[in-house]
Image (cartoon, rainbow, N blue to C red; front, side, top):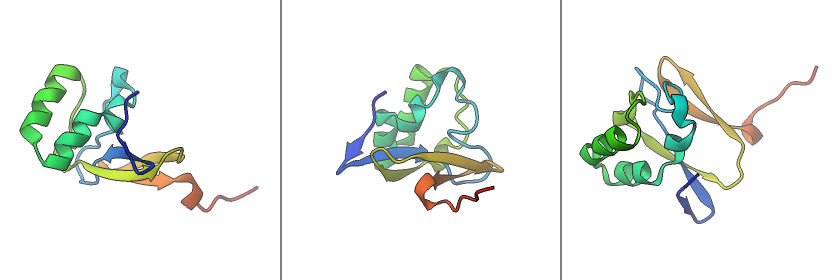
Length: 104
């Protein structure tokens, strides 16, 4: 899977806006590819959402793209264990090392 890596950090796409999640709603057969897709990262960085819409239609034709208009990039150190939490479409990134785990 292609990823954008700069200075040892990986670009992770997520949508913090309410309404629909980017990675948590409708990836289906695309797995996590769109979560890291370099072209999507480029479009978000440049603010070219027309190009992003065209790209998604061509390369991810069946993917639900709700949340696309509120995409943001989190830069996580390579190898970081994380997950995307979603509430009412608003996504946040949870890093394993930052969690307070309980032991039974």
